[in-house]
Length: 139
Length: 497
Image 1 (cartoon, helix red, strand yellow):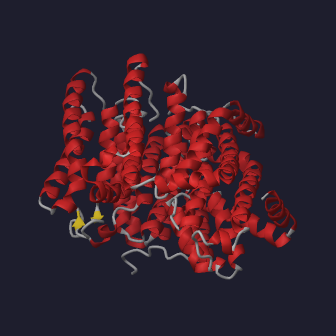
Image 2 (cartoon, one colour):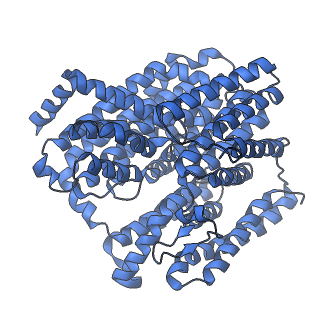
Image 3 (cartoon, chains in turn brown, red):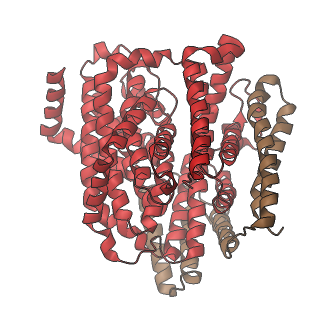
C-alpha cells in the first residue's frame, strides 16, 4: 500500500466488525452494549476508510523511517523482560540501547544500566516489597 | 464552624508529629505520582499496612494527604517525558510535553504546580461552603444521568479533537469496546476474552494509558534523536521560568477558577473518576479559548485547566466517599476500603460520631497541597533538567518504568505484551493524526456507562431520556456538537493532538 494512513481506519473496521460479529452470538443483555457501540463504530470506520483511501491518492502519508526498527527493538525489550524478568531485562536493555543507539562505551553503558537497576531494585523490591515479574526462565 | 477549622489548623501546624506525618504523606504522594504507573491507587494499597499501625484519625489524615497530592507529582513526568504518571495526568501531557520540547519545561512545571495548589485549595474551600447546597444535587443523579454523563464525556473529548469529530468518536467507541472485554456486569458471561483467563478482569487501565501515551512519545523521541528538549540553552530551566509559569496561572485566573469548580463538582459525582474531570476541564479550556488551534502545541492553559481539576476533584470526591460511602473516583474507592480497614466507618453517621473529622480532612487537603507546592517549587528547576538526558538513556529507562507500572497494576505478564501491541497502535494513531484521549475516556467510562444504561432501562425503560436532568445533559451534548460544527466552519478546527 502506497499510503499507510488507511491502515488505521482499516484496523478499526476489522476490530469493530469482529466485535459486532461476536456480540451477535451472545444473549441480549450480554451483547447489547457492544452492539450499541460497535455498530456505529463500524459504520463510522467504513466512512473514514473511504475518505482515507480517497485522501491517500492526493497526499500520501508514510511511517517515518526508523520507527518500525525502534518498535522492533521495543519488542525485543519486552521479550527479554519476559524471559529473564523486569529488573535483569531492564539492565540488559539499557546497556544494549546505550551501546547501539547512543554509541557510548561499554563501561558507561553497563554502569548506567547497573545504577538504574540498583535503584529500581532498592525501591521496588526492598523498600516497597513489591513482587516483580521474575521471568519465565527462572519461575 | 470557624473555631473548629482554626482549632484543627493550629493543631496540625503546632504538633510536630502531625506535621511530620503530613510531610511524609506529601512526599509519598509526590513519589507515587512521579513514577509512571504507580499512582494514588497503588499508593493507598501499598501504604495500608503502614496506616494500620496508627490511630484511625491519623491514618486517615495520612492517606488523604498522600492521595490528594498524587496528581501534583504526576504532572512532572507528563510534562518532562510525555508519560502520564497517572491516568488523569494524561491531559496535562497534551500541552505540557510540547512546552518542554520548546524549552519551556520550567514554565510548564511552574504553571502545573501553582494550578495544582490553586485547584486543591479552591476545591476544598468551595466544598466546605457548598456542602449543604450540593448534597441534594448529588442524590438527584440517577443511572440515566450517569449514562448520559459518560456519553457527554466522550462527545466532548471527541469534539475537541479538532481534526475530525468522526475520528474522535471512532477512537472513543474503540475505548468503550476495550472496556467491554472481560465478564459482562449484567450476566457474568465472558466477552472477547478469547479463552484467556487474564482477560476476565478486563484490560488494565494503567497499561492502556501508559501504552497509548508513553510508547508513541518514546518512538517519536527515538526517531527525532537528541533529548526531549530541542532547545539547547540551559538558562531556559531557571527558577525564573518556574516563577513565570506560576504567574501564568494568575494571568488565567478565571480559567483556573472555573476549572477548579468544574473539577470539584465532577469529583462530587460518584463513580465518574479523575479522568473525566481533567479531560472535561481541558475541553473547557479549548472551547473557551480565543485561539483553540494553539492547544496540543504548547498552550499553557492546556496545563492549567487539567491540573486545577485534578486537585480540586479530590475535595469533591471526598464528600460522597465520607458521607454516603459512595466513592467519587476509583482512588476514592480504595480509600473507602482503607477507611474501613483502619476503623473509620463512612456514612452519614460520621457527622454525629466524628463531627470534627470532615473539617480536619479539609484542613489536611489545603495544607497538603501547600506543602506539595513548596516541595516541588524547590526542586522543579532540577527536575526540569530531566529533559536534557539523551534519548538513548531515556528511552529504555522510561520503557522499563512503564513496563514496571503496567506489571504492578495488572500483576500478570500478558499485559506486557498487550502494552507493546497497544503502544504500536498508539504510535499509528499519533503519526496518522488520530486523537488518543477519547480512547482513554471511553475505557474509563465504559464500565459505568454500561451498568448505568441497564439500570436506567430497568427503572424507566426507553423513556429514561425524558427525565429533566437527562434532558439538560442531552442539551449539553447537542450544544457541544453544535459548537464543534460552528467552530469548524469558522476557523477550520482546533487540534490538541
